[in-house]
Structure formats: structure tokens, C-alpha cells
Image (cartoon, rainbow, N blue to C red; front, side, top):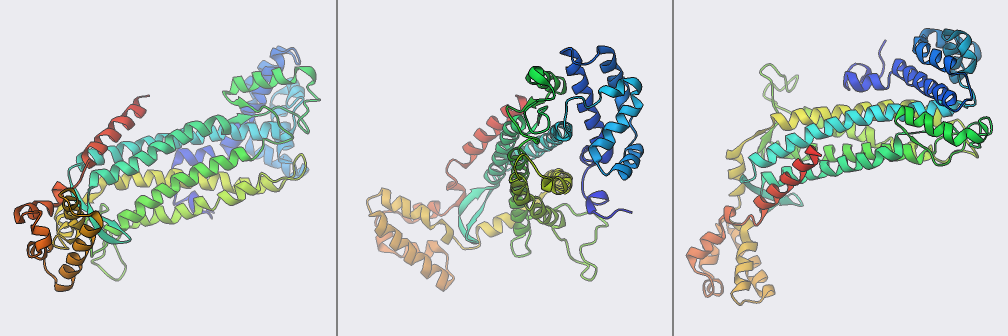
Length: 447
């Protein structure tokens, strides 16, 4: 019976598989195989036995491992026993010179490698969706808002480019994080490699090379959890960007604004009682699950404060954190790709909102021009501020108020005022910025 929603509602098949019991066992077997191969390479165990472990280790049964664990109450030793059984005589060398977390943490490094590959793939999909939107809307002028109030104009392309740039930074972060997170160790009971002797460093190096993992420089019984905390911080960063995009889409889909709308199926139901509703439920789901992903950061930090050379407080916590945060992050990335690819932009509403204040939001344009023509910037600010307040109070176009102001018309003609109040003429370098960002991020994709 399924209990957690990641078992039946959220997540992709691939990411669920990465954190499944079966895949975890497979990755542990990979670590044991790599250990045997490395030890044989350095003459510590017979080459034939290492080859047999390579051939047989993946035949270990999850059911058999659970059966053994029920008897001995030690998960790693149950796996060692299970693998040893299927390897016959060669089983005597399974786990030789290792402690539990040499294998468990190394297996986690392999799972993190798998998970980061999937997350990177989704980040690039979202990046492409945002870049396509940025290109297609780079000339679409819209009202910008600060403090929830109308500001000067911008373009939709600039908005999409800002989001794309942030996703690009997450891809950079992922690449940087990978080398510190996808690591393994073979350091023994408390980190001294005493059971391996003088060959310990070379065996560890060979083992990790076989697994394509980075070996730790130094360790105690466990890989230090600052590495894993960095992984959860990366997921939280990604989730927060998606949260931000989701919030903006939800805001722009408000009835009063109505500039964008999530795709809505022909038979989709918006409300059980209000038949007319078309709710931004996908964006709301992203925003909601982002909270859960961010909640993993604090326990991840606490997992780094273990007693002495280790205790077990991190173990139970990580069994929950890794699958939950990874699966949910992968899920909301997938959802956001769908949202962006199918987002409907209502250009009539964009235009209506752009002209809603009858030019008042273009006050800065006139202020700047007056300053260029000789008026003090502070005086120009007060003149235009007063005119704007009058326009709002009297519900008149700003053009009418300014056209009657002699301080203004002494420096700027009425025709010039009209041009200065045209939103399309006041988007600065927005188009060029979008084109530059698109070019830069498309190069990242090729690399």
C-alpha cells in the first residue's frame, strides 16, 4: 500500500528508480565489486576471486538481504552476507578491509551521480523552453511592476531571459557541486585505513577510478556531510527559482491582470463548485513542493554535526531526505518545463495593462528628458511627480496635465511629450540584453 505521494503522485519513473531499494542494492553491489577489483589489482586478494565477485555480486536478492537483516539487525552486514552467498568461495573476500560506510557512502555517491545527471537533463530542457520564450517575446512590451504597482515598461522577453539566466547559473552550480558530492571513500573503521595497510591510498584511488567517483582526501568513518548539505542546497536553489517563476505566473494569471494563462485542457475541471474556474494549479503545485524541498536543508546541515568519528543520527534522516528532495525537485522541474512550453500569453491584456494608467507610468521618461534639456534633476522629479499625482487624482491622461504645464512645455513640445509617453520607445536595451543572454546560454548548451 502506497503511503507517500512520491510513490504514486509526484516524480518521474527514472528518478524514483534511482532511489529505489533495488537500485540502492545494485549500487552497493557496484561498490563491493569495485573494492574487490581494486584489491586484486594491488595484490591483496586473488584476481580470480575478484572476477567471480564481479560476475556474481549483482545476483544478490533484495528479499534474501531483508531476511538476513531481520535476523541480525544490521543492514550492511546483511548485504555483505547476501553477496557472499551468491559468490560462493570468492565470497570470503567480499567487504575485505572495508567498514560499512565505505560501501554505503560510496553507493550514495553513485546514486547522487545518477540523480544529478537527471536533474541536469531537466535543467537544460527548462533552459531551452525559457530561451525560446525569450526570443519569441523580446519585442513584446509590457508593464513592469515594483511593490505590486505599475512601473516603467519592460518586455516579456527580458522577464524570460532573467529566469533563463538563473537556470544557467544552477547548471554551473551543478557542475561545480558534482565534484564535491559524487565522491567515495575506503578509509576503514575510523578513517585510518589500518585494515588495508600501506596500500590503502592506492586501493582507494583504484576503487574510485573504477566507479568514476572522486576519492575523499581524508575521512573518519563516514564521508563528511557538508558535501551532502551542498547537494540539498543546490536542490533548494533550483526549487526556489521555480517557486519564483510559479509565483509570477500565478500573479499574472489573476483575473484582474490576465496576461498569461497555464494551458487548460478541454475537459479539465477548475473547481468542484465554480464551473468557470481556470486555476494555475501546476504553478501552485510547484510553489507548494518547493517548500518541502527547501525544508531538507536544515536537517542536512545538522547531519554534519555527528559525535566523534561518527554516530547514526544522520542515517535515518538521510533515508527520507535523499529520495524525497531529489524526486520532488526532478518532478517540479518536469512540471515547469510543461508550464513554460504551453504558457498562453494574452497580448490584448498585456496592451490593456500597459495603457491602464494613461501614461502616468511613463513619468520617468519625461523627467529624464527635462533633465537633459537643462532642468535640475530634483526639480524635474518634483514637477513630474506633482503632475502624475494630479493625473491620478483627476483620472486624466498625463499628457493633458503636462501639456498645460509651462515649466514642461518651455523645454519639451507637446509632440515630444506624446512621444516620450509611448511605452514602446522606452525599453532601453531590453531587446539587446535578451539577445546577448540567449547567445551566451546557447553556447553553454553546446559545451
